[in-house]
Image (cartoon, rainbow, N blue to C red; front, side, top):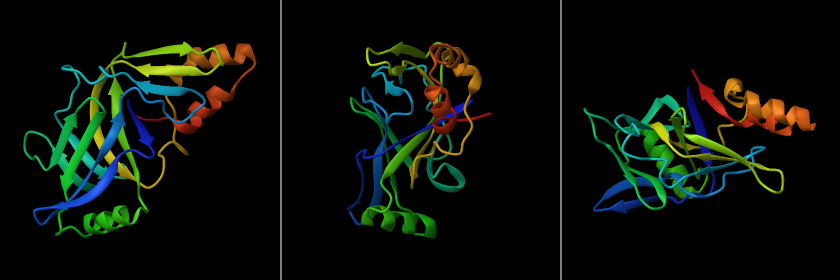
Amino acid sequence: MKEIRTFQNVEFRTFEEEGKKYIEGYALKFQKDSRDMGFIEVIDRNAINDSTDLSDIVALFNHKEDYILARRNSKVNTLEILVDETGLKYRFEVDEDISYIRDLYKLIKKGEISESSFAFRINEDGEKWEKRGDGKYIRTITSFKGIYDVSVVTKGAYQDTPVDVRKFEDIENTLINEGSTDLAYNQYRYLTLFN
């Protein structure tokens, strides 16, 4: 099952270099708290490691496979991916022959689109849950199984999407026993998983 996360205010920009136009940004940043989704998510600095599948990553607009921006796999390498101390950075050249990529470049340049997102899977033991002193739950992703897309998005991808209820069943039951269903509600509202 794939999960999708969207981040606001990540480093994201358009630029020109040697007459070519580029779009680049961070799909994810390490050791940064996510938006409050009823819980806080943090990606450990070592979550992307030698066992993480980065063999076929596609850059998309709004996670829609109809709007491919660039790709990196064994056949094509129009998408640059770099894992650095900050996070997972992506960069691709704007293909002037594809109208929706030209349009997207203009919208980003005007500031109308400014968020990045990524689709991923975690390893079976690739997360830990803790409860902070203020009662908030923290999910730390410790090991990604794979990163499958990086996306330029107009809005967060969390609303109106299903959640993996099996993964959160234990936490939901605990919260119900404590008299709080806010976390369970927000999980349904904010997490996106695809079968």
